[in-house]
Image (cartoon, rainbow, N blue to C red; front, side, top):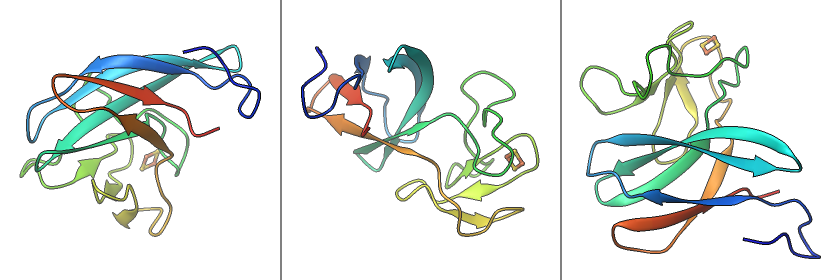
Length: 119
Ligand code: FES
């Protein structure tokens, strides 16, 4: 997607929609910098976030594409164990309660989706 006058430098990328309870990683460009993100299917609805923990700024997945708690109900940061609500990205347990993952916009339906930066 080309940057628009209203949103210069906004990046986007096409991703394959993960199945329910699964995640997938992707990269897109924002103002000339590569941003790593991930998308999760939460009960048929997709959410995407920048892969950066609000606690200390590390990627959540110490092991590639491992974003979920053992029961699959929440997102977890492997560095210090922050737990995030997957629909909102808000930390509900751990070292940064109330802080949130940076959301990305998910557009489209079906097997191919488009993810783009909000700013
Ligand atoms: S960096 Fe994620 S919990 Fe500390």
